[in-house]
Image (tube, rainbow over all chains, first blue to last red; front, side, top):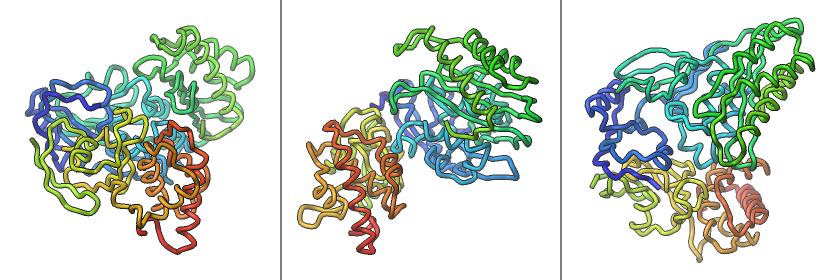
Amino acid sequence: MIRLTSLQRVSFPRTVEEAGAALAAAEGRAVPIAGGITFAFAPYNRAEELVSLSRLPLDFIAKSGKSLRVGAMTRINDLLESRPVASYADGILTAVASRIGSTLNRNLITVGGNISQPFIWCDLPVALMALKADIVTGGAVSRSLSADEFFARPPRQILKTGELVTEVVFPSLENGTVARYRDFTLTENDFALIKVAAAVRIVKGRCREISLVVGGASALPQRLEKVEAVVRGTKITAPVLAKASAAAEAEVRVIKDIRCTLKYKKVLCGVLVRDILERLSRGEEGGR
Amino acid sequence: MIPISISINGLKKSLEVRPAESLLDLLRRSGYKSPKFGCGEGACGACTVLLDGRPVNSCLVLAATADGREVVTLESLGDQQRPHPIQQAFMDAGAIQCGFCTPGMILAAKALLDRKANPTEDEIRRALDGNLCRCTGYEQIFSGVKMAAQRLRASGKSAKKK
């Protein structure tokens, strides 16, 4: 149900600059609309104007060497079916895209929307942080933010008035890096209780670098730095996995979820961290 | 009211929409009754239409943002006298029970078959993963899509035309 009781007009700018200017001029009375899914869940009763981003030239996927650029207006189904995306980082982004909503909603949800308005169920923010992607903005302010910076607080507090996400840049990964995404849902079409994305670089059997991020535990994704410290520099053996699992359970911060207890979520986080690290240590690629 | 230009089933129309009106509400008050109001929050697929060729939940699309776009509803596919091959296959496969989800199922299937003439079982299931059938007749529905795909291939036609 769309709840926009104060809405009076919709504009269709054709450039990012025009969109930024329209948002800035409205002084908080206008909100940008990409796929529009958010309006079914979040009340924006005060919004008097919608600035549609549908005509901006931000619907693209471009591979440059081993890095990947994805425009903010790229729809999730296009991400899911893209060959360049499937060939990047062991296909982790394809795996993530397949977990977002249904086909009908993936045809509406955009990459920019999924990260600019992250809900606890959003999957992309977790992967962006694990892959150390950069988020590029334009409009009133043009800059590049690391995913860690972007998700440090709710993005609406990070983005200035009239500033829009224009694209996500996924970096070239060093040789030996493998990445994976794992989630746990109670039913196939429910959103995950906990999800984990990880990228590790293993050289001569030892983990040289690790990036491990958990989602679903709280409103924003969390990097588990203590777990990363446990694993970095080690051979990922059974004792290391046990230690990493316990560290994850202790480190993750969880908020109330009607579907299970806080303790259950913490334990589940430990289980998924152990599982994903075990699979990565065996060189298993992509997928869930 | 906000003026929009929209193509519905190939006919260009100039309409006035209420600012917060959904595409589903616009279609139904304009006489297109095949998209149904089910959940109103993008979970059931009863309101499926094709927007620029892609199946979407029309309850989540703001009508004002559909300006300049092409909408296809089930009404454009066929009727009782001349059913579309997908509609015929659904009838032959026993894929219709109460019928509430059927328009959405058929349009989701059409969008798939427009792109893939010979989809796998997994691809069919994924294409219909946003369309719920409360009669739980999924196996017959999947059979109907497979049957339609087979007939369309045999006739050398695409799902786009009858």
